[in-house]
Amino acid sequence: MVNVNNQLLKNECVFTPPSSVHASSFSSIRKQFPAIKENTGTIFFDNAATTQKPQQVIDAMNSFYMQYCVNANRAAYSLSSKLHQQVEITRATIARLINGEATDIAFTSGATDSLNLVALAWGLHNLNDRDEVMLCLEDHQSAILPWINLKLHLNLFGKHIEIVHFPIHYSGIYDRKSICEKITPRTRLVAMTHIHNLYGLEWDGKDLAEIRAQLPDDTLISLDVSQSIGHTVVDTDQLAVDFISFSGHKMFAANGIGVLWVNPKIREKLYPARIGSKSSVTIVDGEMKIDRSTLAGILECGTLNLPAIYSLKSAVEFIESIGMKNIETHVSYLTRFLYEKLRVIPTIEFAPGVNNYNCAKGFGIISFRFSGISSSDMAQYLDQRGVQVRSGDHCLATKHSEEADYIRVSLHIYNTEEEIDLFVKFLEQVLSWQDL
Image (cartoon, rainbow, N blue to C red; front, side, top):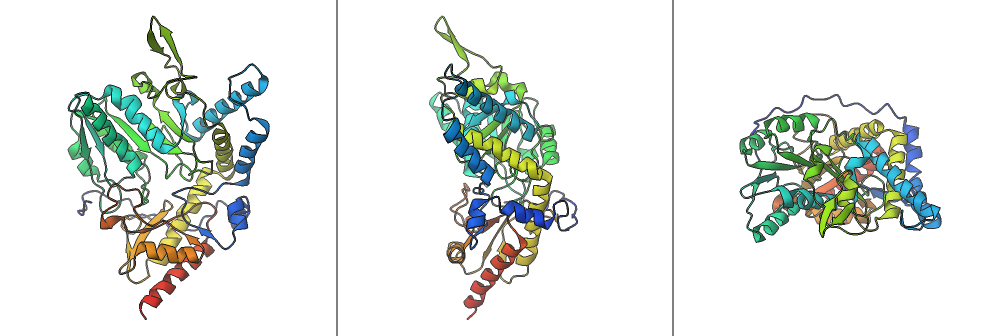
């Protein structure tokens, strides 16, 4: 991690409570989540790992099994055709959410699957000897390992690509100066994360545009938006990238469904990473011809996770019913509210992020630890008090280092100030016992 202040931090923002949604509205929102409503003694602060599901998403999945439990577009009967229409409606709904086109969206099994598809469908066919892929080893492993794995595969065929590492600035965002210094004419792709899963800061559209301006014309950017998609606006026009990957289960949908968006300008450069039933290919004289008119035709095959797709449409509709900006405002406010409570606790040590970054906006994640106390032990104590937080390696490539030993609190629309107050009270209890 870079410890020199070689880039400008953002101007300090104004820290004010959210006003766009009345407090009573949030109370009503909480009641829409059965796991929150029924488990009144539980505080769920692990939303970066997964989100709870609103009743309408649960109802949508039940509706699939009760009314649409057929395969999509595999038969002449109308129910199969109707289900296929629902799949395509969901695709269009996702496109609306990220300001894209339905033809540029493929369904996957999750963000990890999407990120692997970028490496296999694009990287396997377009990278050559001495080409370079840039990435950050402090990112989530799912954004890193697909490229390490691809490097090993290419080695078997006599191609030797380079993996170039760039650091994170001590404030908790990528070090822009270091990235620009490492760019060469051989740089072919830069892999990045929109909001870091441990440090909790956003690499926004302006940051991406500045990096894009320094890259060779044919260099691509892959962006993992898993930690932003459910509570921050993700706009394909504002984000100067070529691949966007995310999971449904972190935005109120079921597990096992993800999305990969690909810039239509590079669709011709993609090849199927796996192929089979429903792939858009034809066989001519023993040769396979690929129909590249849609991303789904290139990357989707076999039976999709239909009930999860069904849930994804309902999850987006739930988000839209509240308003993404309202969710973002609430999460930002709670993040700063939590930080103001934590920062006065003696012996607290913050991870890079909100404590080092000169902006009063929050992005839902704060990570910290206490000197002399195991973060895992602290998390187990909190669990006994009904508070669920993340500790451990946080899926970082540097997980075996001391830097990974943090408690992570991640917030969402159904979390409250009262929960934060109680959480901080429990922390202070443990620290008071330590002093005895």
